[in-house]
Length: 93
Image (cartoon, rainbow, N blue to C red):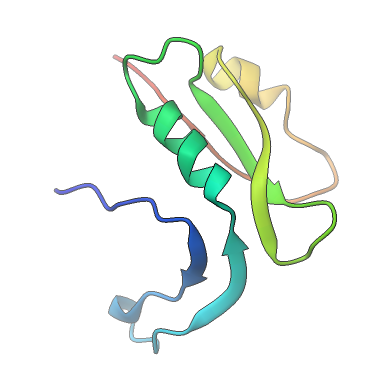
């Protein structure tokens, strides 16, 4: 299965689900795409997780809240109790 590209910009609804493709109103800042690329890079030993959430000054802009290495154990200690976040962790076998 080909990997879908990670694009910064406005999130879109998925027309494959039967919806009409339109803006969700959420703006993913370019920094998110840059850091996500670093997390996905197997050669990068300094970064293997990222947390993404709303910019503190906006209800529409998504930005990088935190990043680091140490896998699931490290990122799980960084999860906030009171706000929604999205994240990713690079795993290896």
